[in-house]
Image (cartoon, rainbow, N blue to C red; front, top):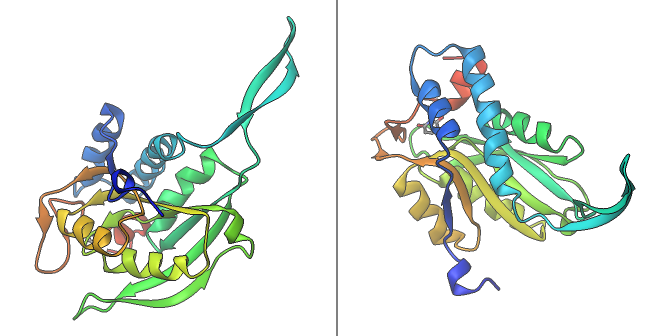
Length: 215
Ligand code: URA
């Protein structure tokens, strides 16, 4: 059970490199290729912060000068879980940091009238109970998809869950933590609000469309 101070954590990673790249992503004339490249780069930078508390151990190695006990990541495994389809953009960056990580996928679409999330695909590693899950979705907007994804993921009992979103709305954070106060959120920015269509304002538009050139 998470302790009180560990509940409802939101980590805004406002490093100048992330903020600069995010500003370029937000601009409507930024090309698909550039958008994709920037999302990958920001995801790597977010990844460093998200994985800051990964457990370490040491390994005896030989440098050209002498032997030493050097730090290495312990065997504890993780799984990246991409909420399709826009999660793929963050996944790309995370896998550059940890190429050996397992990947799960959750397919959800927003029912256009109600904005409610409907599941169409779910696949995670069989040994997920032994893994830490890092869930990826660029936009925490209404929070419906994120809550549905975490609801479903919790049924498989990963050891621990973190949620990574490039951008969040205040409404999305509130909704998310109403249902999953134990899941920390890592993000590059919290924007002003949601509009009546469920888009983040000022936001960057539809992340999936911008990532895949389907606008
Ligand atoms: N999904 C997006 O891609 N963009 C938003 O602004 C909200 C949800």
